[in-house]
Image (cartoon, rainbow, N blue to C red; front, side, top):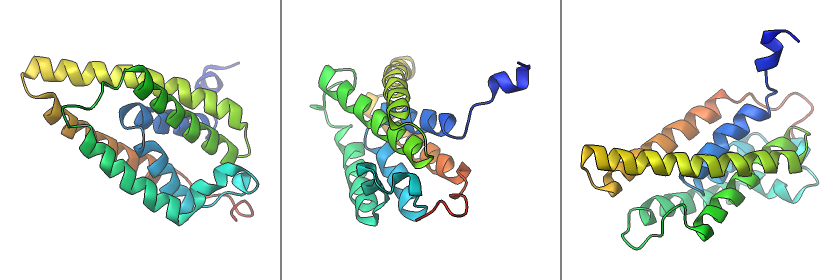
Length: 174
């Protein structure tokens, strides 16, 4: 195997890593961005799957509202730590959802995409927690203020991730 093939990953892998990273930072943002994309670019791979609900415009709108609410709730003093078991489970499930939906939309294994997305979301949860608390401590600024920057990073990264995706191939869209 030559070196260029070794580092190449199919169009399923890297987008899932991106969406799952968003899930680790803001759990609802990842499904919101994916649903936004899928509602405008339906894929036949989801046609007979329960995951097809992510392609519905109403789902995209609802998830966007929930994602905005999550960004507000994140700054409140009573909000549990993202590494607390119930919150971490939510991020894992969010990553699994986006991974399964992306892989299935590309006629791949929902299980494989779900496992990849869930694991990547958990890793991103711990990494983003360490970055957020470290920046707050080093810069001596409130953690909520760093959270606002994290929100901007999530929104900007999510938008960039969507711009990088190619439309469904001919004959594959619904």
